[in-house]
Image (tube, rainbow over the protein chains, first blue to last red):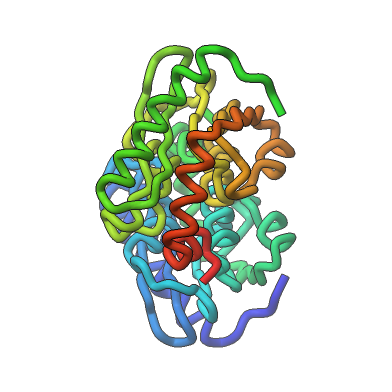
Length: 151
Length: 151
C-alpha cells in the first residue's frame, strides 16, 4: 500500500460528489475521478440503475467521460470504493500508475491483483465513504449483488 | 485450455461478423457475442474509433448491448481475439463461466489470469481471425498500441 498526499484528500472530494450525485439519482453510490496532479481529466459514477448499463461502474464511466487521451502516464484514479476486477483490469490495462480509494472495507475488490501488476494502491480509509457504502449495501442487497456479479 | 464444441464454431461466426463490421466502419476489427447455449443474448465490437470511446472493446460493447440480465450463469462469451485485462477482469467479475476466442496469437491478453479465476478458456486458433488482426496491427500500429494501453 502506498501513502496518501494532502492533495489526494482534495481530489477525492470530486469522486465523493459523484457518488452522492449517483445516490440522489437513485443509483449505486460509487464515484470516481481521474487527475493528473491537480488537473481534473474527467469524472463519473456507477450508472447501472440510471442507464441500465452493467459495464458503467464509477471508474469505467469516468474513463468514458475522459475520452481518448492517449497515454495515462502520470495520472491517478480516485474511487470512493476499492475497484472490482472489471475496473481493476481496466486500470492495469490502461497503465494508470496510481489508484487512491476512499475505502476498501465494504468490498475487497481487486487491490492485490492491481498491486501485483505494479499499480500503487492507496487507501484513505474514509469513514464518510464506508458508511455511505455499507448503508447502501444493507438497504439494497440484491442490487449490490447484481453489481458485483454475485446473483 | 478447454475443448471446443461444434456449436462454438457456429456461434463464433456472430463475433467474426461484428469484427468485420467494425473494420468496414473504420474501427478496430475485434468482435464479441454472448450466448447461452444456442441463444444469442447480445453482440458488439470495438468502438474506440467509431464512438471515440476507450472502454468499449468488443466484449464490453457486447455486455453493454446485452444489458442487465442478472446472472450470467450458463453463458459463453465469444471473442475474435483473446481479451485484454479490462475485458478479462469483466468476465471474471461478472462470473461468465466460459470464454471462446478466435485466436490468441496476435495478443496474449489475460488468458492465464482468467483461468486462474476459474474461467474455462477455449482457443479455436482460427486463421481467419489471426490474419485479420495481424494485418490490422501492421497497418495501424499506433492505434493498436493505444487500444492496449501501450502508448
